[in-house]
Length: 108
Image (tube, rainbow, N blue to C red; front, side, top):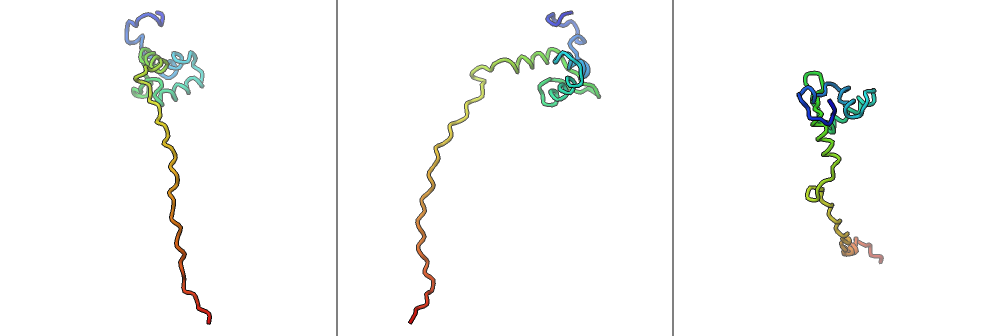
């Protein structure tokens, strides 16, 4: 069965364990690929879930997530441009303080 053909059973679509998911996504099962797989699952890049103590994922859901992440957004779904910053307001002018006269000793 090739990857381009439709899946006949759920077992053909299922990936069981981090090693199988790493092999499907990254093409290898070395320690680094497995670590990347756990990290990508933790941040939500790879859709997978834990059932008991095992990681389970679907090939179709991983492909759909990849297509969603790599396809350009339509204009109406693109994030809006940030607003222009407001021009800086000049600092308010303060009135000069009137001199305070303390009691002066009058010299005689």
